[in-house]
Amino acid sequence: MKKALLLVAISMAITLIGFSAKAPVKFGKIDKEFLEMTVCDIDSTASAVVLCDYGYFNGSTFSFTRLVRIKILSKEGYEWADRVFTTSSKANIRGITYNLENGEVVEEKLKRSSIFVDKVYDDLYQMRVSMPNVRVGSVIDIEFTYSWLPSSWYFQRTIPVLHSELYIEKSIYLTFRKNFIGNIRLSESTDDRWIAKNVPAFREEPYMSSIENYISKFEIEIMKVSYPGLFINFSQSWGGVAGIMMGMEHFGLPLKSFNNYIKGWAKEIEEEPLTDEQKVMAAVDKMHDVKWNQIEWKYTTLTEFKYQYSKGVGNSTDINLGLVVLLRKLGFESYAVALSTRSNGLIYYGTPSLQKLNYVVASVKLDNNFILIDATDELLPYNLLPERCLNYTGRIVDEDGTKEVKIEIPGKHKVVAQYNLTMNKDLSIDGTINYANYEYAAYDVRKEMELVADIDEYIDAYNADKEGLIINEAEYSNVEDVYKPVKEKYDITIESLGTQSDSIIYLPCMEYEKMDENPFNSSTRLYPIDFIYPVERSGVITINLPPNVEVLDVPKPLRLAMPDKSMDYIYSLSTMGNKVILNYRLRIVDAVIRASEYDKMRIFFEYITEKEAEPIILKIK
Image (cartoon, rainbow, N blue to C red; front, side):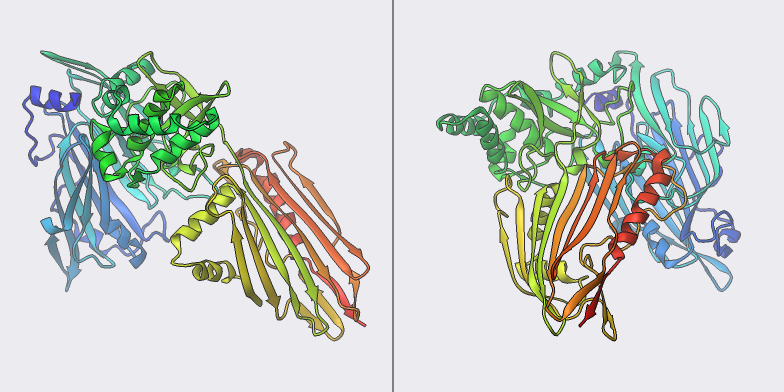
């Protein structure tokens, strides 16, 4: 790798070193007042607080040292004592847990056995640390040093931060770019030092995209390294990003080669009389022979596919880059598309970034249109992307250059319910409940079924929150065929539903389908509402009443629509003799709603929750 060549060129041997700059705290030295602290002044509800997070980049040695000091305020804060740090090389790491015992400061050092190093890729490591003897009141220090600049620096966390400081020493060899994300104001900002103080905890909101799009931080990108005898251009343009990736042995090299596995798969497919779409489907099915190891990455594990394929397992790019090669072998126009997953945050317009890309999917031209395909999950049809990939834009990466690809949302989450119920004279209810689950809803059902030990466990999970419902028999269809909706049929008995006062019965028709509470109950909203994909929830509930029961009153119909037509809702209940028929439908047309529309949307959902809780009023004759 070019980074490795650079480090060799400048003869860099990283050792655990002290800070060259004046640091706000020193590893191994702590004031007793922090151990005596029982509550965070800026947030009395905090389970833990970052007392200091300090990072220093040495411009001469290209080493980065970080010291983070955290106070544990409650048991819920223990999670901050088990940390995962992403680094660009193996890090030298040390840690201390401080406790106050009988008025004295007691230290316990981090043991090597509690440090775990995972190599994700040549220049990407994950350091997992489990601090010793952590209790309520503990303070922990973790310090580590590694080569290269960090890819990001967070001034804000999901707990309060009292002091966050980044110092990047000027270097004549290095040019970098930083992109600030978030809303907080820095206490100090110079050409090489940035400080934030008393930063409130970042609060997640319901239905929001990745916090990486909003939490206050720097995203740091190396642009150029210039050293005597060595010059490296990094991501100053998207063309440069594509050129770097195509020159890499774990991306460009396997993309240009056909190995025997792919040749054999292509031959098998070509021997069948298939349409173009069927060939694409067959190619995706072939790639499912390689099981995804749950690693999301933009480069292949090895330089040749045959080793991964012979083992039958690979990372996301082993599978999707192989799909590009297979589709090309079948005569299709196909490209690799690099993107940033939802959890990794957005690619910001006009900001070329190699490090922001962390995933690869395939693009293929079919019927004069390009579609994006991810072949890592055999429970998804070829024309649906997994949720992690639905993140607005990607970039074609090819020898001829690169261009932006808009990631269209290829489907919706659609569930259609049908109830056919009969009330008996003793007011118990018998009947059937049917569901048809389409596209992403079908995927969710398949995924849930895959995760349970047997179908009885799935039935128990379905029935867990449905008081009074007894499932006598269950039937499922199309579970194996990912191109069809998953259908569920339940033969049920309801021993009691609603309440009775003398001869009056209050029957909640939507008891098992209603929205129990408004998911948007906060009075304010800072960030856009992100449903990931369009949503449709609809159904028909039919209840046949016994001769001794008559309808006194039914809820009034309701029609709602957002002013911008981003969502709508209908509710209609009618009676035909002793038959009650309820129709309802909620459609969320736009997957993302602006925060400025939040007040209207909150009222929209409030009407729905109130309406769906309304009962039919019946009378026993």
